[in-house]
Image 1: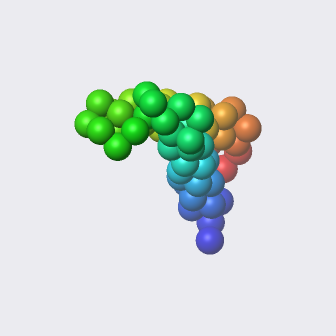
Image 2: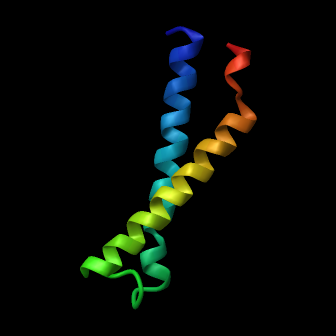
Length: 67
C-alpha cells in the first residue's frame, strides 16, 4: 500500500476512535445522553466533536506533506 493510502486509513481510524470516545459519554451522564430523540442528538453532537478533534490531532501528528 502506498503512503497516501496508509495516511487516509490512519485519519479514518483517528476519526472513528474520537467518535467512539464521544459515544462513551452516555455512560458518564445517562440523564442527558439517553435513547430519547434529544438525548441521541446530544450523543451525535458530542461524537462528531470528538471525531473532529481526533482528526485534527492526527493531522497535527501526520500532515499530508510527509507523503
